[in-house]
Image (cartoon, rainbow, N blue to C red; front, side):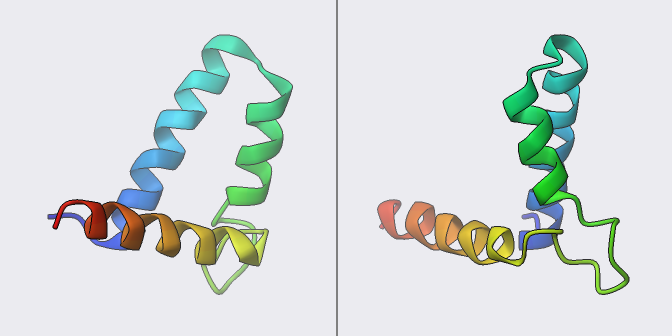
Length: 65
């Protein structure tokens, strides 16, 4: 099973590939706020993104039970 961070990076890569194909501005903006490489702490540029990601994981896991 993937860690939360590995899953986040996989989803980020998926969106990067989609952006490369479409050049969709909204996806580009989303990727900018999700980028984990901009700061030394390794968290997304928009700090709320990580919290939203963790909430999404909890919701998915709860729905499986």
